[in-house]
Length: 84
Image (cartoon, rainbow, N blue to C red; front, side):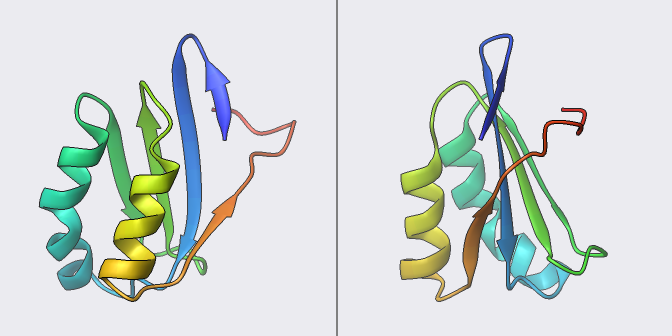
């Protein structure tokens, strides 16, 4: 998690392999993130889920991906030299 100007940034390595599975998560992630933003980078080897939110969404996102959808979900951390 990184923080910048009252926004929280989260990165997750996932096992989401295609747009179909990502699309199945759309309604749930929209409800969790609300006024924030999220997307999957399915071209990245880690199938990264990026989230920008006003609050800590980690428990909800991890519950959705791991417990409800049976997907891998590992939080990644920004490196000090990365731009948010």
